[in-house]
Amino acid sequence: MRLSAASSLGLLVLAACTSDRPVVTAEKELITPEMRRSREAAAALRESGGIWCERCNLVVLSQHDCGVTVPCETCRQEAATPHVHGLTRYCPACRREAGRAHVCGVTAFCFAPTCLREAAAHHVCDLTRFCENCKQEVGQDHVCGETAWCPTCRAEVSNGSALKHICGKTHFCQECRREVYDEHVCVER
Image 1 (tube, rainbow, N blue to C red):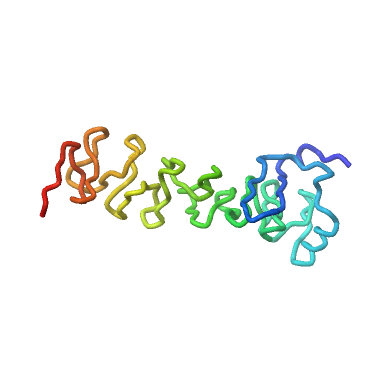
Image 2 (cartoon, one colour):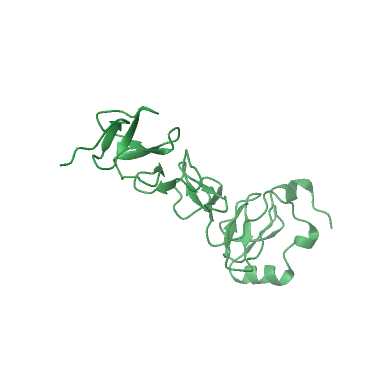
């Protein structure tokens, strides 16, 4: 049985999780007849509320997005590619896989093996993280409401003190809790 290019182009393959480690599926891999879901798996999906999708030619779940998602039997949810079992879920608004801390239009999931989490603009693997309070990517020394990540300096800088940050000339002083010139020496209080 051959699949037409149109019906197989948007489909993806989700590998079953065989260990506790997250498994990232291959991007935009075409489904071959050998990869098709077994009749037993399709029957189990149907018994648990699955429905037949005429366009995709397989049993899907209610959150199915034709050509974008297929059921992940391990996670028991519709998933897009790439998908990480237990860490990502499909966001219908963004039409892509997203992590637990996903904010529509702000974050995207970083699939780098050292990250595997939601990230915002100016994300740097192993240097920044997403601050859910500030809704932005931040550095290790982040102070909510007071600092922001400078991608040029690769450091947290003040986002509200009288002295505005100047790359290469100022930095955020953790002691004084304000932006200061690089020559700054903290005065004991």
